[in-house]
Length: 275
Picture 1 (cartoon, rainbow, N blue to C red):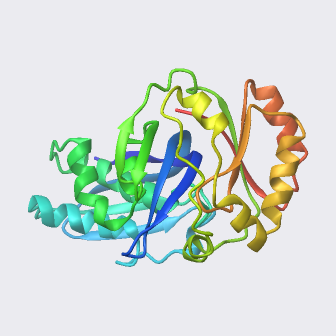
Picture 2: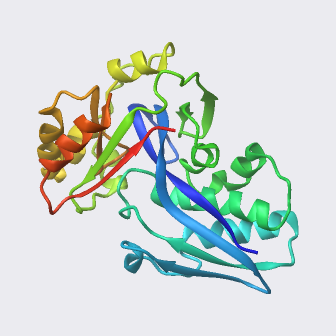
């Protein structure tokens, strides 16, 4: 029997960089939110673990142990002492290295998927703890719920998101990749204050993405996308993560589609809603 799981696209409603750490990482504060769509994983039982990748962005990935999906699967197998394997298929719908948690969301979805396929009955918290060493965004992606992230992003506090769910979301990427490590390295070291801890929507509106101007200097198309998205006065326009994907939130689908029609046709875009 085959099981399937969506790797929900992640967006950072706000992302404030607070401190450069001695271990090479950065302390951040961020508001995580998730789209209703993303990559799609499916799996069925087998004697060994294997990965097949297809979809519009599948050609840029290798189906080996360099892929976070297989790393997550091997970690699950080892932690729980699972003797069974699985054939995992990843349908890659999201651009690679684009600031919307693609690899992290895929690894998280693989863990949720194998948890069901292998009948492990593990909690999402346990899955998040097991997978945390693989990437800072992975714990948030395991839950795929609106949350406040601190530290490197792995310390999570879940938020009342009743006033942001079901908002119409437009994701846009210029199909140009930017280096996360290069962008964090270029951060000026100035702590511009933390993310608000009250209402999530108010905190998002008042917040910012400290990596946005750095990424835009490296990839000017980001500024062009943000300007184009802003023309229709959506409720919120911002870059997600370290880029280059930007997003806009709308109150209705008609406004989203009107904005999408004005985009450069060479850009990638996806319409969804917040979970």
